[in-house]
Structure formats: C-alpha cells, structure tokens
Image 1 (tube, rainbow over the protein chains, first blue to last red):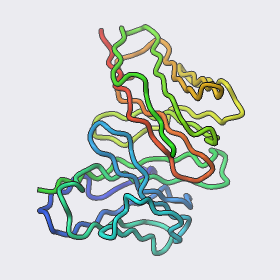
Image 2: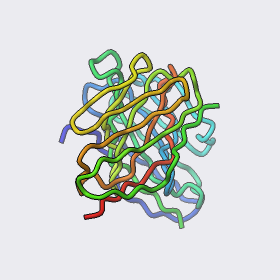
Image 3: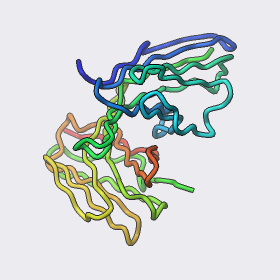
Length: 116
Length: 111
C-alpha cells in the first residue's frame, strides 16, 4: 500500500496519560498535515509541515500537543496529560507541492483516540 | 473568519437517481475547493476539486459546480449507487495550506 498510513488505528488511554501517534506520508510528498475530527464534524486543521519544518499551528493545538517531523518523512503527534476532550479521530494527510495535483491532500485512515 | 457550511445534514435518494449535495462558504478569498467522501472508520477520500477560476468541473459520475457570486458549491452524483453511501464534506482553501471543512452531509441510498 503506497498511501498514507497511521499507527495505531485505535488507542484507548486513561485521563492524564501521554499518547503518541505516527503518520507515514506518501513517500515523495513534502507536506504533511494533522487534523482532528470529532463525531459528526468535519476535520479541523491542527498543524502542517513542509519537509521537516513546522510552518503553521492552529490555536486548537494547545501546549499539551506537540508534533514533529524530524527527517522530513514520518511524523509523530504527541498529546501529554490527555483529557476526555481529546477523544477524537486524528487524521494525517500528505501532499506534494509543485506536483500535477495542485497540492491535493491525501488522507490516512486516522487514529481513533478514546480517553477514559 | 473562514467557515464552510452545508445546507442539509442528511440526504436520502433512490438508487439510480441523481444526488445533489450543497455547500456554502464564507471566505471570498478561497481559491480552491474540494469534495471528500468519508466512509465509516476511514479517512476522507478525494472525489473532485475545482479552482476558483472555474464554474464547473466533471469527473466520473460526479460534477462540481461553483458559484462565486453567492459563495455556493455543489456536488452532483449521477446514477447513485449503494457504494456512494457515505458522509460528504466540502472543503475550501484560501492561499494558506490548511483546508477548512464543512460539517458534512450523510448520503443514504435507498434500494
């Protein structure tokens, strides 16, 4: 499968614990995005990377959230001291700037987080 | 601020009929619009896109119409099939790279 992959697909954790999610983008894509989606809503932008540089962060990304893309390939999203309100689907997307698809974003299957 | 909304949260159509899903957006600076399909437990799947310099774009069984005067976007699905059942989102982008999604319309196909 050469699409965007995310791991784990599901995560159940207790309030106060830290969790980390991983995203592997399409291999030649230079941009990587994180979104959060709650039930019945559309995805909401969290942050994005151009190669290894984090270029924009949403105000939704509180201090408890941190994202990295150390080598410009895979990315991790960590949530510290999880709260019940963090329960959501965390989606990763990637795109190729300058390619023929006008920066079309391809989404992964998401990681569903449940905070008890 | 940016906001994208949908006129109807649910839509039921008969198999074989055409479906029309509508979307309103508020940011007149948006220059790129996309329709995504999301099935249960999966990430959004790209359907079709349109740039702001176009009014209409056609794909396989799908057509997107853009009316910039009233800030309205629609997705038409021809000859709707059971596999079209999903939640459909419109999204916009205004220069910056993030997408702003609407709330979604759940399309249900009746046999």
